[in-house]
Amino acid sequence: MKRKKSKRELQRLISEMCQFIQQLEPKAQILLVEPEGREEGEDAWIKVLLPYRTWNRKADKVADAVYKRVWEIEMDKGYFIGVSLRTWMR
Image 1 (cartoon, helix red, strand yellow):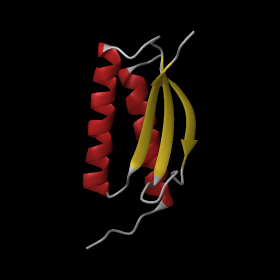
Image 2: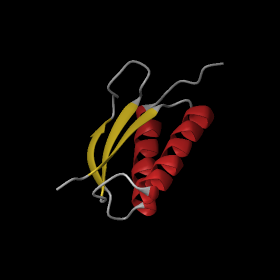
Image 3: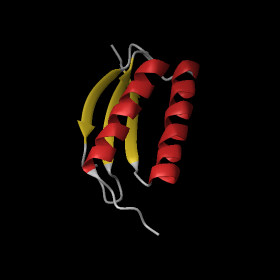
Image 4: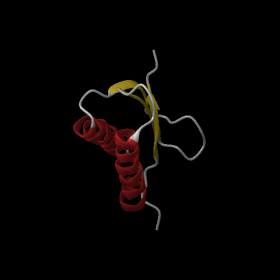
């Protein structure tokens, strides 16, 4: 049985994901949140800038945790929140 999706629940999950990212990396910048997603099948899209000059081991750990949480939300709640993680360069 497919669950009906609600905007309120989606907003709560987006907020939870942003807080989760900030807990993993307090210096991360949430650059963009699109509550409609970018592609078919996405319920939302979050673009994040990590405070590392290059992709490194810490970025790998953050990415692993974030994508695990994305999968958990999709499996448990039925919402797909796409997350784009990038590092900054000078």
